[in-house]
Length: 253
Image 1 (tube, helix red, strand yellow):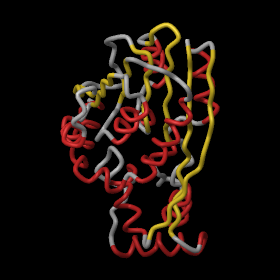
Image 2 (cartoon, rainbow, N blue to C red; image 1 turned 30 degrees about the vertical axis):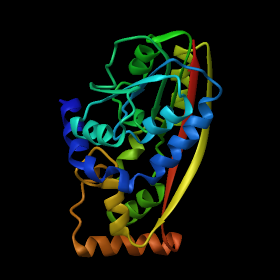
Image 3 (tube, rainbow, N blue to C red; image 1 turned 90 degrees about the vertical axis):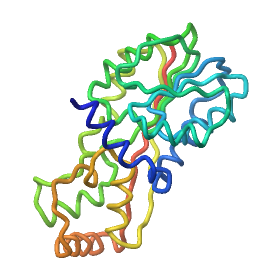
């Protein structure tokens, strides 16, 4: 079951997620600004994880109650330890199939890229909006870790790609949004980070993704292979640079 695998993998990294989630943190701050001037009383946060974005929502909307749902019990345990605000409630549920309640704002940060049926999930979530409600979300697009993808192809050929390549692209999400909402907006931003070496980059990917190996790479990382990829990386880019394609979306019914 895909949902069970995702839950298990996120549970395994829950304790370390926040320490490696700098791009997710930046996306959360930008998503809040992108969401715009809304005044919700009830908020749903699908895929709330460790509560990184939940904290921002609580501070931005002091009148609102927030329900955060996540498929990983371990992630929710971290969120509950961090957030003592009685306005925040957390529930174990699959955000991709969640279908309960009515909300003025549904907002999710860096979660929807893992959905297997994004069109169906967005249509379902849009159906949970109160009249005049807003759905806003950020996700990482297929150009995320493009530098790593280039280095891998140079060493292993086209059969080895980062799993981000399967994430929904900008044009695809535009079509999905227009099919669901009468009004929608979409923006794109690029974040970059540098790492001291390839090993630390791979560790960062491992502790912020759903898989036990970095970004779903079917590679046995021997010291020799690690050196090969790092050499190809530095020859092309001069440093271990990672790009994150942040895509921000908003729709109103």
